[in-house]
Amino acid sequence: MFFRELVTERLILRNIGHHDREFIYRQFSDLEVNRYLFDTEPLSSVEEADALIRFYLEEEPRWQHRWILTRKEDGEKMGTCGFHCWNKKSGICEIGYDLYPDYWKQGYMAEALTAIIDFGQKTMKLKKLEAHIYIGNADSIQSARRQQFVDSKQTYMETFRGIKYPHVIYVRYF
Image 1 (cartoon, rainbow, N blue to C red):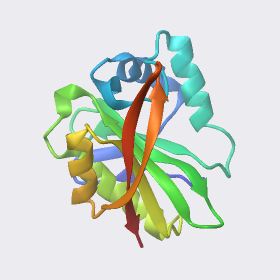
Image 2 (cartoon, one colour; image 1 turned 90 degrees about the horizontal axis):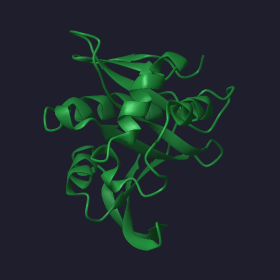
Image 3 (tube, helix red, strand yellow; image 1 turned 60 degrees about the vertical axis):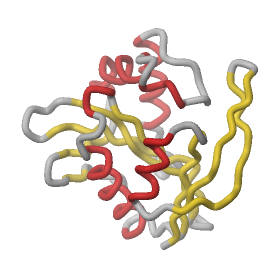
Image 4 (cartoon, rainbow, N blue to C red; image 1 turned 90 degrees about the vertical axis):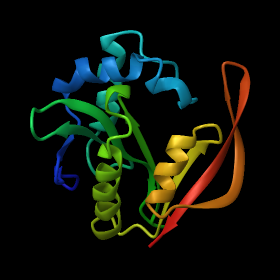
Protein backbone atom coordinates (compact mmCIF):
# COMPACT_ATOMS: atom_id res chain seq x y z
CA MET A 1 0.00 0.00 0.00
CA PHE A 2 1.40 3.35 -1.02
CA PHE A 3 -0.28 5.33 1.76
CA ARG A 4 0.81 3.91 5.07
CA GLU A 5 0.29 4.56 8.75
CA LEU A 6 2.52 7.32 10.14
CA VAL A 7 3.76 7.58 13.72
CA THR A 8 4.85 10.70 15.59
CA GLU A 9 5.79 11.32 19.21
CA ARG A 10 2.18 11.45 20.45
CA LEU A 11 0.12 10.29 17.47
CA ILE A 12 -0.61 7.44 15.15
CA LEU A 13 -1.91 8.68 11.83
CA ARG A 14 -4.02 5.75 10.70
CA ASN A 15 -5.36 5.34 7.21
CA ILE A 16 -9.09 5.99 7.19
CA GLY A 17 -11.25 2.86 7.21
CA HIS A 18 -14.84 1.66 7.41
CA HIS A 19 -14.46 1.20 11.18
CA ASP A 20 -14.13 5.02 11.46
CA ARG A 21 -17.74 5.68 10.41
CA GLU A 22 -18.98 6.85 13.83
CA PHE A 23 -15.96 9.11 14.28
CA ILE A 24 -16.26 10.58 10.78
CA TYR A 25 -19.93 11.24 11.40
CA ARG A 26 -19.18 12.95 14.74
CA GLN A 27 -16.33 14.96 13.23
CA PHE A 28 -18.05 16.22 10.11
CA SER A 29 -21.47 16.80 11.65
CA ASP A 30 -19.98 19.07 14.33
CA LEU A 31 -20.75 22.69 13.51
CA GLU A 32 -17.52 24.01 15.03
CA VAL A 33 -15.39 21.59 12.96
CA ASN A 34 -17.36 22.60 9.85
CA ARG A 35 -17.24 26.31 10.60
CA TYR A 36 -14.76 27.06 7.78
CA LEU A 37 -15.43 24.12 5.47
CA PHE A 38 -17.31 25.76 2.62
CA ASP A 39 -17.27 22.89 0.16
CA THR A 40 -20.04 20.67 1.56
CA GLU A 41 -22.81 20.59 4.11
CA PRO A 42 -22.12 19.05 7.53
CA LEU A 43 -22.91 15.34 7.57
CA SER A 44 -26.43 14.50 8.62
CA SER A 45 -26.20 10.69 8.76
CA VAL A 46 -23.80 7.82 9.30
CA GLU A 47 -24.52 6.78 5.71
CA GLU A 48 -23.02 10.07 4.52
CA ALA A 49 -19.94 9.25 6.61
CA ASP A 50 -19.76 5.89 4.82
CA ALA A 51 -19.80 7.67 1.45
CA LEU A 52 -16.96 9.96 2.54
CA ILE A 53 -14.92 6.98 3.70
CA ARG A 54 -15.54 5.15 0.39
CA PHE A 55 -14.23 8.22 -1.46
CA TYR A 56 -10.96 8.04 0.48
CA LEU A 57 -10.71 4.26 0.03
CA GLU A 58 -10.88 4.20 -3.75
CA GLU A 59 -8.33 1.84 -5.25
CA GLU A 60 -4.78 3.07 -5.55
CA PRO A 61 -3.36 4.85 -7.35
CA ARG A 62 -5.65 7.66 -6.32
CA TRP A 63 -5.40 11.42 -6.04
CA GLN A 64 -6.65 11.73 -2.44
CA HIS A 65 -5.93 10.23 0.98
CA ARG A 66 -7.00 10.85 4.59
CA TRP A 67 -5.45 9.89 7.89
CA ILE A 68 -7.22 9.75 11.26
CA LEU A 69 -5.25 11.49 14.04
CA THR A 70 -5.21 8.98 16.88
CA ARG A 71 -3.60 9.71 20.23
CA LYS A 72 -1.07 7.01 21.16
CA GLU A 73 -1.76 7.04 24.89
CA ASP A 74 -5.45 6.11 24.69
CA GLY A 75 -6.42 5.56 21.03
CA GLU A 76 -8.64 8.67 21.04
CA LYS A 77 -9.57 9.81 17.52
CA MET A 78 -9.12 13.58 17.35
CA GLY A 79 -9.23 14.75 13.75
CA THR A 80 -8.18 14.08 10.19
CA CYS A 81 -5.62 15.33 7.73
CA GLY A 82 -4.62 14.41 4.25
CA PHE A 83 -4.18 15.23 0.62
CA HIS A 84 -6.48 15.82 -2.32
CA CYS A 85 -6.22 16.96 -5.93
CA TRP A 86 -2.81 15.27 -6.26
CA ASN A 87 -1.42 15.80 -9.73
CA LYS A 88 1.32 13.21 -9.91
CA LYS A 89 2.72 14.56 -13.16
CA SER A 90 3.24 18.12 -11.89
CA GLY A 91 3.95 17.15 -8.27
CA ILE A 92 1.29 19.57 -6.98
CA CYS A 93 -1.21 18.65 -4.29
CA GLU A 94 -3.61 20.24 -1.81
CA ILE A 95 -3.53 19.59 1.93
CA GLY A 96 -6.53 19.57 4.25
CA TYR A 97 -6.89 19.19 8.00
CA ASP A 98 -9.45 19.40 10.77
CA LEU A 99 -9.40 18.84 14.51
CA TYR A 100 -12.19 18.28 17.00
CA PRO A 101 -12.48 21.38 19.26
CA ASP A 102 -11.56 19.49 22.44
CA TYR A 103 -8.00 19.15 21.06
CA TRP A 104 -7.35 22.64 19.70
CA LYS A 105 -4.22 24.54 20.75
CA GLN A 106 -2.37 21.49 22.08
CA GLY A 107 0.08 21.03 19.19
CA TYR A 108 -1.54 17.87 17.81
CA MET A 109 -2.23 19.25 14.36
CA ALA A 110 1.27 20.72 14.03
CA GLU A 111 2.69 17.29 14.86
CA ALA A 112 0.43 15.57 12.33
CA LEU A 113 1.10 18.12 9.58
CA THR A 114 4.85 17.78 10.03
CA ALA A 115 4.51 14.02 9.46
CA ILE A 116 2.28 14.18 6.39
CA ILE A 117 4.25 17.01 4.79
CA ASP A 118 7.40 14.92 5.20
CA PHE A 119 5.54 11.97 3.63
CA GLY A 120 4.41 14.22 0.78
CA GLN A 121 7.91 15.46 0.09
CA LYS A 122 9.79 12.18 0.42
CA THR A 123 7.31 9.52 -0.67
CA MET A 124 4.91 11.35 -2.97
CA LYS A 125 7.75 13.45 -4.42
CA LEU A 126 5.69 16.62 -4.19
CA LYS A 127 7.16 19.81 -5.57
CA LYS A 128 4.43 22.12 -4.33
CA LEU A 129 1.81 21.79 -1.62
CA GLU A 130 -1.18 24.12 -1.43
CA ALA A 131 -3.49 25.00 1.46
CA HIS A 132 -6.71 26.74 0.39
CA ILE A 133 -7.84 28.69 3.46
CA TYR A 134 -10.76 30.99 4.16
CA ILE A 135 -9.30 34.39 5.06
CA GLY A 136 -11.24 34.47 8.34
CA ASN A 137 -9.74 31.21 9.59
CA ALA A 138 -6.82 32.69 11.54
CA ASP A 139 -5.92 29.43 13.31
CA SER A 140 -5.59 27.52 10.04
CA ILE A 141 -3.52 30.32 8.51
CA GLN A 142 -1.25 30.25 11.55
CA SER A 143 -0.92 26.44 11.28
CA ALA A 144 0.05 26.74 7.62
CA ARG A 145 2.61 29.45 8.32
CA ARG A 146 4.19 27.36 11.07
CA GLN A 147 4.65 24.65 8.46
CA GLN A 148 6.53 27.07 6.19
CA PHE A 149 3.62 27.82 3.86
CA VAL A 150 3.61 31.32 2.43
CA ASP A 151 0.82 33.47 1.06
CA SER A 152 0.80 33.03 -2.71
CA LYS A 153 -1.29 36.22 -3.09
CA GLN A 154 -3.72 34.11 -5.15
CA THR A 155 -7.28 34.48 -3.96
CA TYR A 156 -10.61 33.11 -5.06
CA MET A 157 -14.21 33.07 -3.88
CA GLU A 158 -15.81 29.85 -2.66
CA THR A 159 -19.61 30.02 -2.93
CA PHE A 160 -21.49 28.12 -0.23
CA ARG A 161 -25.19 28.41 0.54
CA GLY A 162 -25.34 31.36 -1.85
CA ILE A 163 -22.67 33.35 0.00
CA LYS A 164 -19.19 34.03 -1.36
CA TYR A 165 -16.26 33.38 0.98
CA PRO A 166 -12.80 34.73 0.08
CA HIS A 167 -9.99 32.19 0.22
CA VAL A 168 -6.26 32.57 -0.18
CA ILE A 169 -3.88 29.88 -1.38
CA TYR A 170 -0.87 29.26 0.85
CA VAL A 171 1.97 27.32 -0.75
CA ARG A 172 5.02 25.40 0.27
CA TYR A 173 7.67 24.43 -2.26
CA PHE A 174 10.08 21.52 -1.93
